[in-house]
Length: 142
Image (cartoon, rainbow, N blue to C red):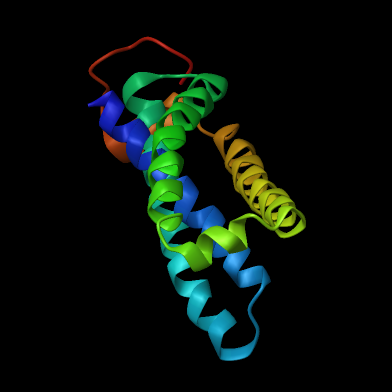
């Protein structure tokens, strides 16, 4: 179950970061349209993160490492899918654009995790127990 929860956290983190990046590049109605799914993804991310903290008591650094480990194969899979089209392959060979995109997405991922870290510091076992009930395992940080 922990592996599934970590995979969900990684997926929600990826989606929230991508929507944040899209939001930064949109204007007007498109920006307002992207804001709702971003809010939904952040909602899901915090729920899975809180549940993971409550159920497994894992430290932030451990959860982040597990999320990165889940994201690497996913990113490789998506990169292979995108590079099958020759037009897209040429686009990815533009080094300057690729580096800018990498920096922007990296910033988005870091920004989402920074906000999650701030929220994570406020999670305490009595609060989580009040929301989720008594834990099966009484070990760990929370």
